[in-house]
Length: 212
Image (cartoon, rainbow, N blue to C red; front, side, top):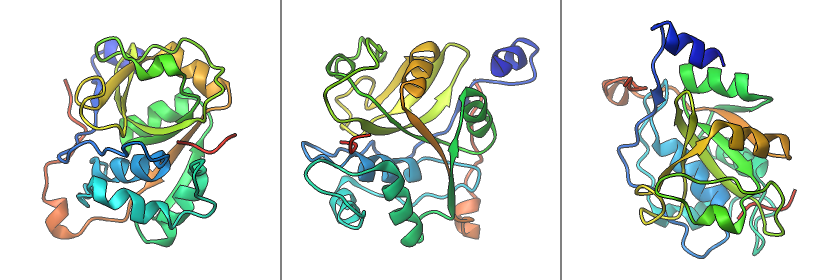
């Protein structure tokens, strides 16, 4: 991949957009579109915002999403609601792995909606294994906060008991399978931060059913 080639040449590093806030927890509610969107906004990006959403903010935002109900909500409707609320400036769908690589390398986290099988709820250490791209369960909305040559780095909205304190890795090949099986990935542009927020150190650091 382009990232692997750049790392090999010493002109790029693994990408990790930091989150100074706790991972959100949607509990048993089918509100992953709200939780995943707010969690992404809590995570650093090129504009260095820090809205500090908590799990208490999940449901109030969820009820603002058009069509939201007991079966969850659609990811794009969640992005529309976020834009209407002034939480984001724009959003655009990313068509493939190369576009996702580019956004993560240069701009910030990526919102993701994919199949999520029962086996994927049981990570092996911090690794979520994609055992299948077919599931009778509803899909899931989460986000990518980083990547390396071999793995996509994701954040879930099931609290800190999931995987590594709510963070996980997924093999790139497994993620690509999910994407090709009807998954979606979205670039989200946050508003330009205030001068006080911009003073934070920049990142990244080096080193269809409704969605539930």
